[in-house]
Length: 153
Image (cartoon, rainbow, N blue to C red; front, side):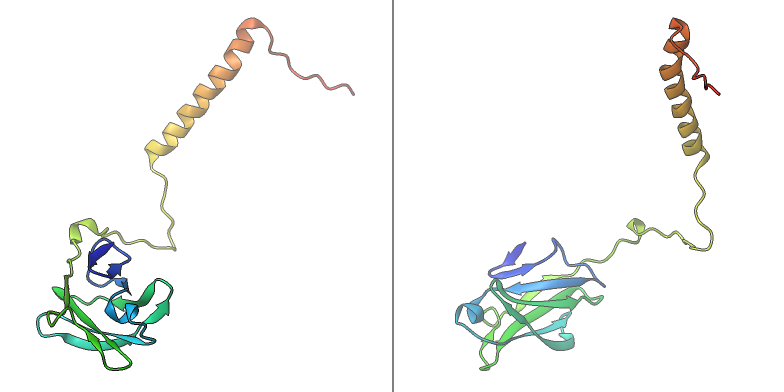
């Protein structure tokens, strides 16, 4: 998904506490830079400031980031020759969405006690088996074609 010129993410939206892959095919890649650093931080004050070296591929430079619990992800790119791509001084800024707790299952799952099948599921299996037997064997019983196999000793 392309959000801004020559910057791609492997997801539709950035969500806090998740990992995202950033792909860059911008000015530094087009100029043939060999090494590019992703200079990034979070929030208005660029908190948790960090740099990570991006891997050069045929499709551009790529790196994976852990998103923190902030409102925005801010970054720019720096080459090994100290050339910067910072969106003409504006930096690249993307919103980070909060995880909705209502959508996260709050169920405690224990491996020591496996889940028991619901009674309705078990009854539906029994009913399906009974219907199958009726459909299969009733016509044979009515027509008289139901023969038991006789074993000769």
